[in-house]
Image (cartoon, rainbow, N blue to C red; front, top):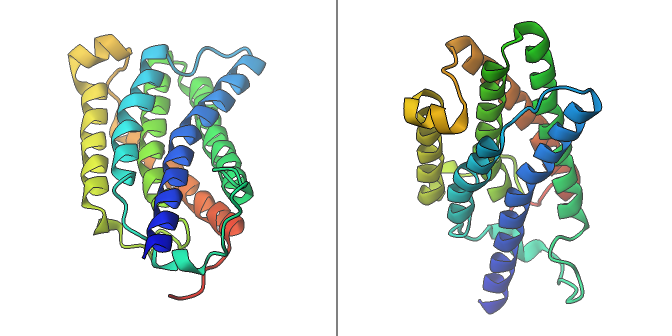
Length: 220
């Protein structure tokens, strides 16, 4: 009915806003950490633009076509004066920024100290944050349940956006023309392994944060 449609639409707007802002805040923490320790820039402007426009843009658009969550009618009536991002969403956004920002900063700091190859380390962090953005789209789409209980394939447009985002990321890392624009370099399977491990650890913490911020939802 109209109430369910309205709640679904409002919830979708919240998810899109959180998804788009999460990268901005995590990038801010990454740069503040680097500045505090007098480290080189962890990412270049072109790389940041790619993450925010390309890797964020397609999943963010796909989230607009997310179907309704059956649990939406379990929510109490919303106060008309309530902000678009209410307290649970603000807490979640803060948690996401801290988790992904610390992960990116830690990865950059450790790899820079170990490898000493700035272009390679920047490329790894660039790829990590791009992957984070794609993963987070699937986390935030099902705000009321763990990602393992959500029907990941129900939003086919989001799945397509995720696959497309990975393909574009690979082009950004390995296509010479894009390497020139983005200042990326080819990275090894070991580097991708690091990215995968860090992303999975982040995913676990994001799911914990989601549960803490929104609580357990009764079965529909």
